[in-house]
Length: 446
Image (cartoon, rainbow, N blue to C red; front, side, top):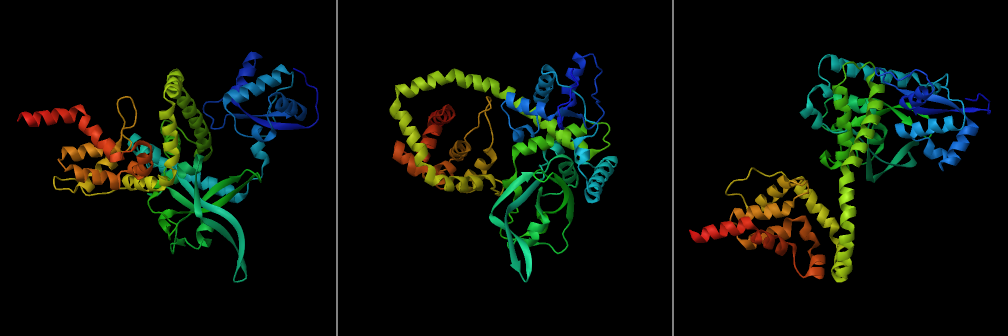
């Protein structure tokens, strides 16, 4: 390897496993440590080499600064080797160069101590078993867009757009810490925003959580104050947090907790959780790709048949496309009904339950159910079937479908395209089913 100097160097973070592939090829011992929380290496790379790499791989400095997978960093190390650039670790870690304030250090120390204390007492969320972990939700940061400052009583205060709140997930040690607290509502709002937002009211003595955050643009770590939604009220505070739940983020968060549960020793939980989070995301991404591969292959195999069917019956294909466009004005009502089904909380069903109550309850219970092939079942169909089995008169069944089924909200578009309503489709489907016909024949025989 050449040792020629090319001027200033930049430090590039790579996975230590990637570096060890190169070390192995050159007869050098590996540096990966299974017991260490941080297995990243920082290479001192000449600026000239960095510019050449970005040019050769058609990247820019912005995309290069993002976090890579192990394969990406392996490619980078291989490129340096093939271009005869010296591969050596920087004497000083890049993250140690950043001055960390005493406040940030104290916050991290407090979080570590809290998690370790909970772990020692056997009360940490990741120690409560599989069911408890899978029932937990990823802690969410809910915020409005910062819109500037305004003068109030001679003081300049921040203002926020409260008409369109956004949500992001806490990651790493902060997420594990907030989960460990056992709070019922997983959502948090920055304290500054909660106090200055006109439509948010903060409880008299709220619990304030100090969480270290990192500003990528300014390359600065700082401590921010957050307040849980349990201590907030007001017209913009939706107490039903189920709307904020993101299954994908929950899966990642639960994966981190499961990984922690399998660890025998955790010395620095705050730092460890960051790298565990990164590895869980990578694992789930690879798993999703493998799972999707057969489906993509099936889709590719079916594509010619679909194209042939479309070419064979262009009118039907055009009608279907037109129907999708005509549905647009009715999607708001569709989503409104869908939310009503999702959040429905009715009394336990009895033989005397009203048809509309039975219809809503069965739709709610059937949401998300799948068949043996894993395809989602129609909850409106199952609810319609339940009404038939309860011997509800057909006109009442049709009324329930028209007034409550989300898909029925699109009836004006359906009538325009096909000349029938969704209720016609569901009732015909039930009445033509084998189970319904068998029961009808058995009743006639009696």
